[in-house]
Length: 351
Image (cartoon, rainbow, N blue to C red; front, side, top):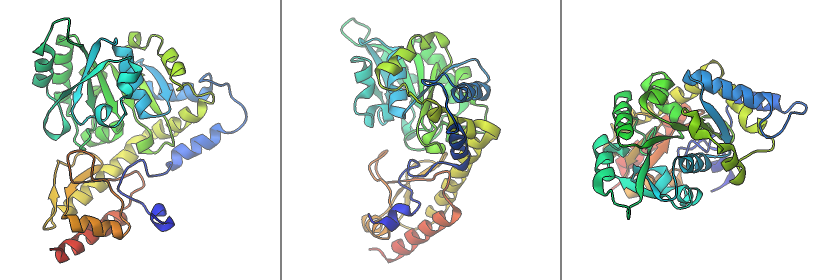
């Protein structure tokens, strides 16, 4: 890939975008003068307080470097090594974290559930929990939900309420992988509390990097008792930043005045624009409902190859086949329209 392609806005991942202006401004302001280390600074305090305001509850908040650490350490805090974690078979904690949930929990087993459009349902949880109850089987202890899912779909409030009720009935804790939680909230247009703690979620891994920060995710414990000694887990895992303000400050810029939802809503809207354009093209198949900031589409192989030759970069191994097209906070209508135009042109001349 040459320098021109690297500078071009792409659809491979919302990780490819830069820092949004509001996060950058807060980061620059935090860089003035000295501040206490390891989180004992006003930026970390302010960011945590803003998260409490967003969720309308007195939750416990920790900042870590990335989503893998957030998911793995929070799941480890819910389980013992002889427990198991239930998740969808294509969940990020299963397919893309190199065994980190098992590693940080000293061997907790991940049990996989199937389900349409990247979602699991209450019945599948109950079947897995009741499948075996003997001492030779890793006892189910937690269920992990991805919001938005790995294929860009979104759990509605009623779905989450049903899942939460089932989990509690079966004695399970509920973890939510919210790498794209902002996009889910913007899509549903609901209060963040309605799809987290009010629906039975115990701990949320709140992603920031895909929505405009440079680094760092927030681990939000709605049940404070579950956060006992989580700071020690972070330290042991190398996740306690000495200059913590540089993880926390961008969150201040992102969370003030609803900026995080503005950026997420824009990314969602552009994904919708792309979805509407692609579904009108012959030889293009939309694979999943477009509900957040991604589109999963199937192109003829030669079309996908020629798109890459024209400098478009996207993945074809995430989800269940097809090409994943991600819109970011800085994606423009021109980007989407040009991509759709190229697809249309190439499909018209293929085969």
